[in-house]
Amino acid sequence: LLAGLLASQDFYSVLTGDHSLRKRPMQRIIGPLSKMGAKIWSRRDGLAPLSIKGQPLEAMEYKLPVASAQLKSSILLAALKTEAETVIIEPAVSRDHTERMLKGAGIDLEILEDRIILKQAAERKLNPFEINVPGDISSAAFFIAAGLLAAEGELLIKNVGINQTRSGFLEVIKAMNGKIELLNKRDQGGEPTADILVKPSDLKGTEVSGEVIPRLIDEIPIISVLAVFAEGKTVIKDAEELRVKETDRIKAVVTEFERLGLEITENEDGMEISGPQPVEGGIEVESYHDHRIAMSLAVLALNSKRGITINGSEIIATSFPNFKELLKEVIG
Image (tube, rainbow, N blue to C red; front, top):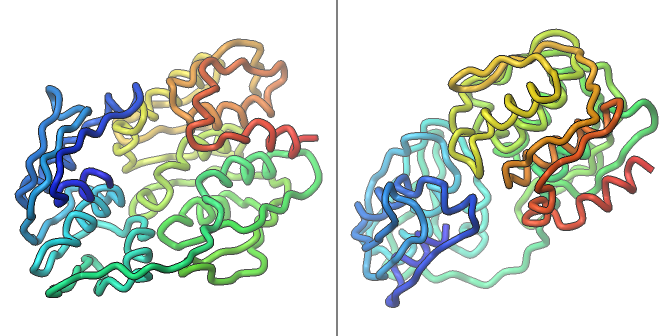
């Protein structure tokens, strides 16, 4: 996102990142921004750090190669200072938080079924506004999973964003026979919000594929944990985007599940897991310096016979600093 924002500024910038970010391919961002006239240099193979020489950019029409809210948002932010109309065509619906934010700030956006149009304006001016940000459903997902797998009791998670471009996880939980209820539904700062009541559930396997994937891409590691304890086969497809996250999340899940003695099949675009399977534990596993892998393994560990040691679990603090404390509170 910052690359798009900085590309049109009248100064020079360098964007770097931690170890995992410097391994993620940035050419998918460099390409469309360069088409707009941006001057961006990277390390070999399009890796960060990125050097950006800001300058005026041209509006464009661009078809996203994959459904990616990050790429879409980068282009939208770059287009704010262009003089003509920018059109972004999506192969599938992806997260729309940036569009909601821009509309809240007074930007004229038209959102159609397969495209977003940033309208032409002589001067686009961002208006200040106040927003209360709801809780992140991607973070809540780990606690929802813990509640579903618990032996007894109920868990109420308050103030969670349930934006339909992010709520694919909830749809999959219901397909797996998970007992969840959305309470106190409301709109908060332009974002649909609710409290989520979670009850222990006898889960069933399901297929996760197609248009729902962009709406739950970050939740697939924790869905794979639920699949271990679900009756029947869970098939995850069309999720090759997981290969270019903080780590190759398909490979990471498969490797660590196999290390734990679990049966799992790796496919190029996903995985297959049959359940339920007992988790013995009593060994060390790797986080791959990926916060979502670490948190998913933590929920798996709660349901193992002998516990699991997660190497590199401190990476969780990058997105959820008090995760461990909250998890201890939830499990008592």
